[in-house]
Amino acid sequence: MNKLSGILLGSAIALGLGVGAVAPASAQTEITYWQYTFGARVDAIDALIGQFEAANPDIKVNHVNFPYADYRVKVSAAIPAGEGPDVVQLFYGWLDAYREAELLSPLPASLTGDVGDTFFPMVSAMNVDGEFWGLPTAVRSLALFWNTDLFAEAGLSGPPETLDELVEMGKKLTKRDKDGNLLQVGFTVVPTGQDHHWWREVLVRQFGGEPYTDGGRKVNYNSEAGIAALQFYVDMVGEDGISEIGFLTDGQTAFKAGKAAMTIDGSFRLGSFNKQRGLNYSITELPSHDGERFNYSSYWVNGIASKAQGEQRVAAEKFLAFITTNDAMQLWLDTVGELPARPEIALVDANQNHEQFGPFVRGLAYANATHFVDEAAQRQIMVDMVDNVTIKGMSAADAIDIAAEEEQKLLDRFYGS
Image (cartoon, rainbow, N blue to C red; front, side, top):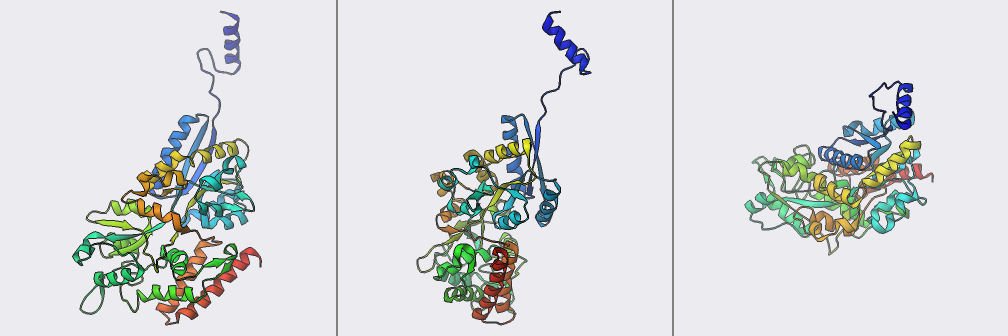
């Protein structure tokens, strides 16, 4: 036995390994990633974790997901207790609430140095006082889904290009029984869904207004433009009669059942609609008004939890960098249907001209993101505003004044005015 072999053997015995035993490999650093449960998202992150671990064998990523309804509560309880995720996914509209609760830590410049040049502009909502608090793998926009079979049955050859055409086509596509009950709606009206974004960032702007000023701190939709936008929206249920709030529960259900000719939704619905047997549909950009096109953009970001320290923090930063690469964004698009957050990937010809992704990708060019301080509460204010008109018979002007006052109180409480 040579001297080196003797040293190794002695070391093995000293460590209790015994002759023939193999010394343990260097320990892995383990981190945990949390997101809400959505089948395609789970598949996408699992694929990315597999790629990451293959390239970084010294890091293990544990993937945990929860039902959407439970997600925020679990995050808010786990991180302050020093448990839960090291890298956490959150809706961009929750950022201020997460920061205020000290659930996140700012990202290092090594991850964010070129964000302004390489990501879509709406990602700047993650920048607070010069620090970024999260980065998205993908972004979202809205588009109009239309049932090609129902359009053909009604003698219509293509989708509406304008809001006026949407209403006129909607009338031809609406069906009622002899008692006036709706059997099929021309268009879905769902304030609790994507419509509150459509009204805020699209309709208000198309009618000549601006929903907020002062960096999102001042409500500005209580204007003639806002009133006109709200009146247009509620008239689809009332005067125009092409829809009904709550028809077949929600827009997604009605459209999948072939009982809604048109609905507005995000690209994340593609997986669900594509799986629906007998549903033949196409997608187009949101209708214009007076030549103006606007869209709404949202996104889920990946942030680093405040609990991530030491080796976990280093590994978390490395994983966050990996899932925001160009290749990761293309995988996310192909798997989930959400759009790459970097224009250089999203705006390639193959994506812009894609039969399904194309309208969403093109919509990003004229999209705006609302700077929410409490997305759920601000959504509810819009829902109540619509109910005040459609159920309580209030005028659009009065309903909008109430909504604006309530939302301004919410903003003032947050910003400390």
